[in-house]
Amino acid sequence: MDIASPSMQTLSVPQALQPEWEQLMAAVQSRSLALPELMSRANQLQAEGQADLAGQLYQAWLDHNDGPMRLVALYNLGTVWSSLRRNEDAARIYREALALKPDFLQARVNLGHQLEHLGQKEEALQTWRDVADSDTTVEIMGAAPDEMRLHALKNMARLLEQERRFPEAEALMRRSLEMRPEQPDVLQHYVHVRQKQCAWPIYEPVGEVTPNQLLSNTSLLAMLSYSDDPALQLMVAQRFVNEKVIKYKGPPLHARVKRQGRIRIGYLSGDLRMHAVGFLTPEIFELHDRSRFEVFAFCWSGDEASAQQARIRQAMDHVIPLQGRSDEEAAQLIAAAGIDVLVDLQGLTNGARPNILAYRPAPVQVSYLGLPATSAVPGVDWIIADRYVMPPEYLPYCTERPIYLKHCYQSSDRKRPVGPKPTRSQVGLPEEAFVFCSFNNNHKYTQQMFDAWMRILAAVPGSVLWLLADNEKARENMLANAQRMGVDASRLYFAPRAAPPDYLARFQLADLVLDTFPFNAGTTANDCLWMGTPILTLSGRSYISRMAGSLLNAVGLPELATQTLQDYERMAIQIGMQPARSQSYKRYLAEFGRSSPLFDMPALVRDMEDQFETMALARR
Image 1 (cartoon, rainbow, N blue to C red):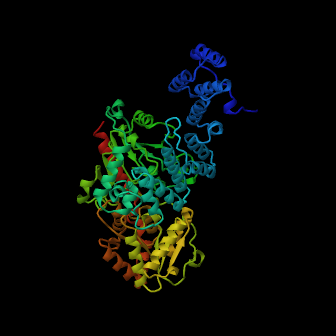
Image 2: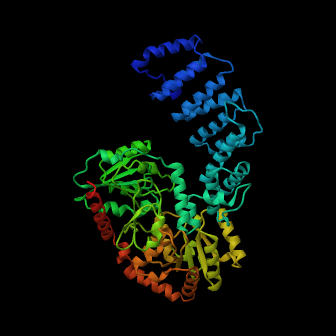
Image 3: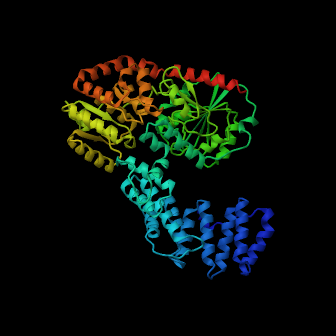
């Protein structure tokens, strides 16, 4: 059967609108419908949820009218089709507008968006580049040319960063900030894209941007990698919440529903898939006691068709997709489900939807795993922790109250698939060298710790450092910094990313994992300990800088959690000079690691459930 394209379809008109619609079409055909009246009626149709009819009305008007006002009608029709995600139709209309007026920068910017949605990324970049390089001074439809140029630069930088073309993205961010320093969103990405490239110092001056602007506009994720100061971490979280999270003043949505029967736990996340959170949590969902608890997933993960995602969904009693729903609609769904305890697995990480929590759809709302730090989100009153990651001196800097688990805060997965163990020659490592290793994301690498690693290599003859190279620029910068520290580039080895089972198998080839600071390894530390490889960490003042230390205490190796950088370096050198110590740690982990409290998932789930039950019943 042939199906007409959306632009060619005739839409059915609701019966209540039929008389007025016929009058509008008659006025269009007689050319008696002026553009202001057309726009007013089209806006009304959109407000009534009839955007398709608004688009058809504009198209009918364009079919019967020429003249200078045609440009306005074309632009408005493009925005209507764009709002309906009819990207091909919107692109066609914007091109028609540009044929009439090539210097219509706003239409060209919007055309770039449509091309991006259609997957034509290079064409989108070139479209925005034409805007950024334009020398027009003509303001059209209230859009100032400089604003359009900044908009185009921002879009180009965003897309290039998503494509991992970091140097190009950074250059465009610098150009944008030189035009206008007061751009918090650009400053935020500028700092983080430098972290991703190991471009130290990350706070490199640009244009008239002040040091305070760089610091205060650092994202929470970037700050967690940059500073161990819990006050700074709280500051940037509160700034984000103040600027981005709604100030809901109504009664809590959970108050509308009476709760009875089994306790209902809801897990809220966009990361229930092939993601660090998705790798740590499946056994929690599988081990919940169904005689006491009913388990819901409220997620916007999409469908990636992976075995990991399928396993997570299978472990749930109910999976409620939230993609395509507003935050308020999502909160209403959660409240209507009668959720007692809502566990937010996202925090303020990429893709988070904190506004859902601001409506308070559950009486108990808890932060866990996704953000090992305070989120400062209103409505999130609790955070799952242990007494190592959240000592008393940290509590003043955390808006959430701790739910202390008995051993370690972090869940594990004892069923994670592991690939066959490779040989060192297969991955390009020297057979006899002492192999230090760090497979954390490059944005966690800091100059302070990298310099420490170079001092460790210099002190341990024949040792090498095996790193993850996220991107070529990060690799170049690390090699340059090694040379600055007097370490031969040949002693640094870079591993490409690999499928999870093969990534896990690699750990067995390393002698000692060197942790990052202040953003400790989380899932990565769990992985290396599960695979029987020791990790040396530095514990600081914040939750995130104490994660690996918590794991080491739970697995029975507390001496590998150092408290100063000097002790960290000294112990790394001692182990490197005495490889038998590394082998001793490996034997211990092989014999006792997997039976330690760190990997006792039934005990962790019972501990969590007992606390959830007490909190939930107290609020029924």
